[in-house]
Structures are given as structure tokens and as C-alpha cells.
Image 1: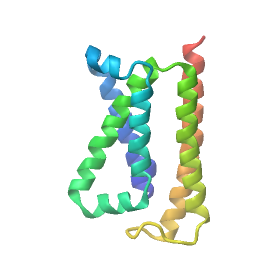
Image 2: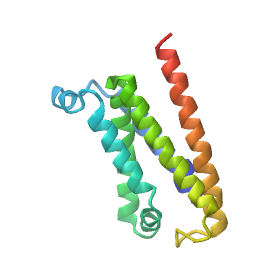
Image 3: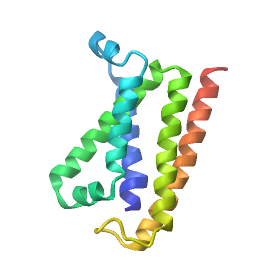
Image 4: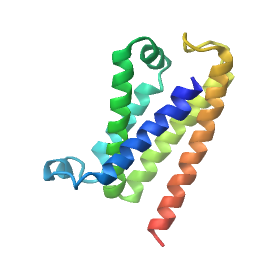
Length: 154
């Protein structure tokens, strides 16, 4: 579970972000579609919210087609996030980063505190370790956004 939620998923999002850096500028249709970064941020949040569900993780382990969908959707998430952070004003960025970090923190705390085993494919110990990893990932995401924001504005 730690591998899926704390290592693999962030790496796939980062890969999407890096792929987006190498692509030519998006066509005008996409630029209009994501004018202030709202559409891309909402798309990324919906993808992330789905893959934070324990049943989605179970399904990705059992069904190869679901695992392929996970990989592709998280790459799209990274693509959308890069475009969003290039266009979005700081207020939009703060809103969506804050929302994403609060999702990570909430789920991380829940994973560490609940006595229920949420994923059928993983043990309770793995769930607790994943919760701790999600909390660390929330802190790391906040720090990374702050550093990027400060670099951009200095």
C-alpha cells in the first residue's frame, strides 16, 4: 500500500509533469479550456480523489485494466497540474494546494487511527505505514509549493 499511494502515484504525477515540460505549448483550444488553471486543477483533484479511495487501490491490484487506467490517469494529472500552475493566479494555487494537502492529511490521519482494514489487499500495518507516508507527503507538498512560489516571486 505504501508503494502504491506514497511512492508510485507521486512518481507517475511527477512523470506527467516532466512530460508536459517537453511538449510544445498546448493548442489554443486547451489554453482557452484551462485559462486560469481552474479546469486543470479540478481535473487533477478529481483524479487524485478517486485514487485515494481504498477500493480503487484494491481494484488496481486485481484488475490489470484498472492498473493501466491508474497509470494513464495519473500521467494526465501531472500534465494538467503543470499547465495549471503555469496559468493559475496564486489564489487559485493556494486553494487547490490547500485542498489537496488537506485530503492527504485527512486520509493519512484516518489510515493511522482507524482500526478498520480499509484495503483488502493490504495488512493493517501497511495501512498505518501508508497513513504516515501520506502525512509526510502532505508536508512535502506544502514545502515544495512554498519553495516554488518563493523562487518564482524573487
